[in-house]
Amino acid sequence: MWIVIHMAKSLRLAKSVHEMLTSEGFLVRIRPIYRTLSEDDNYYELRVPESEAEEARQVLLDHGY
Image 1 (tube, helix red, strand yellow):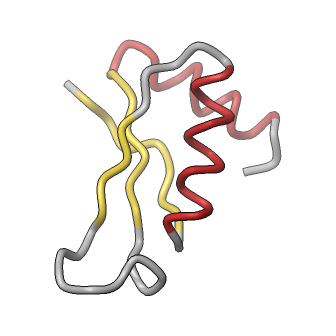
Image 2: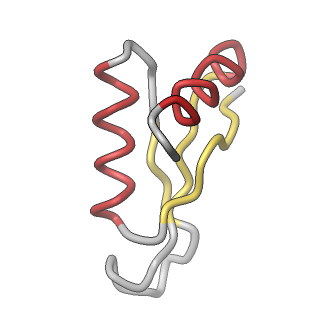
């Protein structure tokens, strides 16, 4: 099961967090919240496998997210 560990306000920010987490070795999926909004106005969920969620959250905190 995939767990949401972070919400990003833009696709640019979501991709930045995705890149940081994947460089740390995590599997990450980005999912838009709304299907009818543009990329700039949308929010995005960053999801990781449940088994990696706690460690991924700690990495986010360590990097200031």
